[in-house]
Length: 416
Image 1 (cartoon, one colour):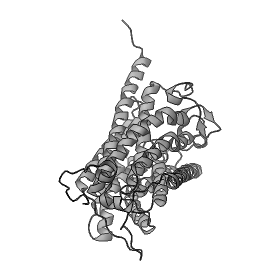
Image 2: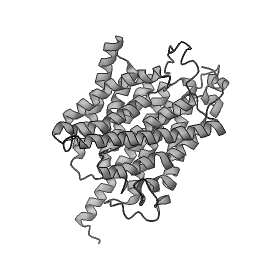
Image 3: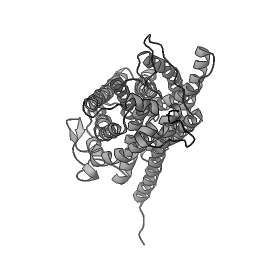
Image 4: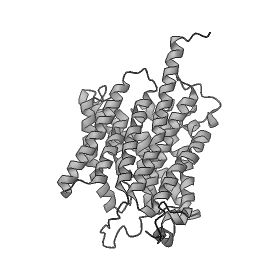
């Protein structure tokens, strides 16, 4: 009978922990699907769920073939990896207590999340085929390059000391600023803006569905953040779970109160996005900040998300779900907040300004990379195969024009 050593037992516990957390992160795709479907019109709701589903299929394969190697392969000048394609070859430089396959599954779920941030921003007017191409490139190149800079062995931002525990920069800033680039190239939905600059309200078709998506995302975030410890034996996972939860609660509370003060009534969509903004922001520092700091970080996010949604609307950057504000703006805020609130090295804890400057640099670098790469990809797609459905197809709805089926059987006029 084989006798397990303590090291074997620790490895087994950590493996189960990471696989469980990978499953939690993967189920967040259901959260993205429901949230985005609820925020948009009924005639496009099936199409957006299909796009999120393709993040999990095409994106997963793309990350397996190329993305993981670029993100975690042997380093080339601190910029990208070059080994480990198809999870093979030389990956011995990655020092883990868990099997590489478990680590890959966890990281692949992160890659899917990054792509799904963009899907909501381009909802209701982007062709299905070009979106698949973008998803493949996002999982193969855009996300992995940024990830290598921060998390890869030898990545230049990681070497500078940047702290991004679970991805406020690598996942959320990359996804959010990619979304802005996509929206700029794609253009706004028909009827969203008037010639005089005024904005028309395009009502969501099912906010109950959006709330369900928000709850699923919040639930999955425990795996997203606590799983990044890569160890079920790390007692700091309790602090990580707590700071994650408090930031979400503070973001939603403040967003609700802020909209009550600003508009006279609490806005449900802003309240949901307030909690998601708090989650996006705390992801960088969840293991490094105190519970009270997490509340402050989340509370600031609740205000920022409302201001940012309105700002991008005035810029005519039409984002039906608020992805740019939630993930881009508040992902960046979360990275910077580490430089302020980290208990070791943070400005407010006597650590001086060095970490804060590194965090600023890191947030800017990954955001610029994500915006530029996505802008280039969308521009090339636009000039070649086209990225936008026709005006007639947009009126009809993408469920019918792209998939020849409606999400709701009782739609008989085919334009609702």
